[in-house]
Image (cartoon, rainbow, N blue to C red; front, side, top):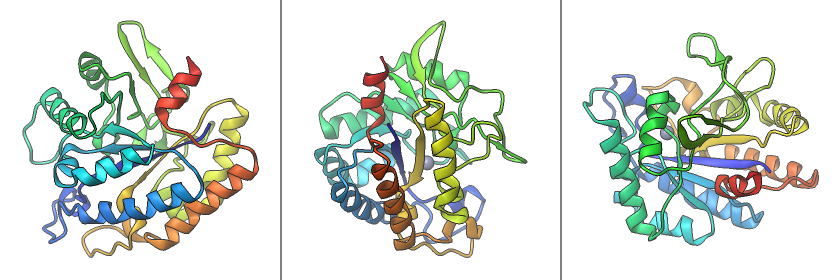
Length: 264
Ligand SMILES: [Zn+2]
């Protein structure tokens, strides 16, 4: 099973780089991106997982319901998306985000991904205490200067002292090069497809992540072109091609929650 996952949040990429920008904390980009994604997923009968911030959910409760009613899994992406210039308690922040979303959908949520995939053991302990069943914040990638997570497992795994399970994001199995969001968008679909084929041969269900805002045309003088290039309809088409190619190969797309159920 292939898991398409969408991080749905306020746009804050300029803010995270210390830039003043009129679009900082804009939530409309993600809303518009979700409109296109829901259309695409419904056309190809794909079920996905949306990791949503509490900040976004407070501003667009009807969008959260729209995604939920379309049969996708709703999961938590913290309350606010930025970790910079903000004093906060991780437990309180996640509890707040979780509660806002659960109140909207009227159902318990079980999955979490940290903003900026800030994975740590402390995070897992907090999530475990809040009753989450899985986390997908581990990006076991090698990207010089950014990540060196080569020593982490590529497969879903548990921990002796915790109930929670970690389901890592997909990367190239040997080189650990990243294949999600900006990497697929800027290098091309073939790059992600090759890694997905390798992972499936190793019986690992690929977890891919994108952001809602990547599916609207973004432009900004305050971020690198890697954030904006090929966003919008171009990326919708690329993702559609990816879905079609993999469906032809007989592969199934499902939410993380459903994958967790089949695995156990
Ligand atoms: Zn995010």
